Image (cartoon, rainbow, N blue to C red; front, side, top):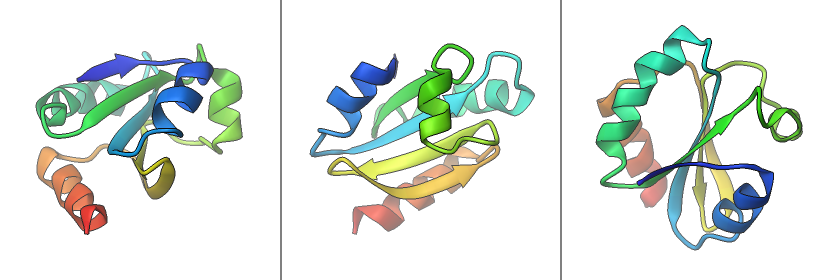
Length: 102
């Protein structure tokens, strides 16, 4: 599942989740973000993926210290356990997800 979310949904669905979730901070004008999108589509069967458009959710991006897009956060039980900047392949993302599952 991929869902585009706003600040309130981020607080309700990500920070209060008891699951492993991936959050992609992206911009529509960002080339690497566009390359990452089909990769996220592929892994969305294995982990919930939330996308946050930094241009539409500027305050949320600033609060989370986003300086580079794409930036991916992996949350476990509502806590950020991993932060990745830049494009990642499917295998790289799945490897990072496996590391934090343990």
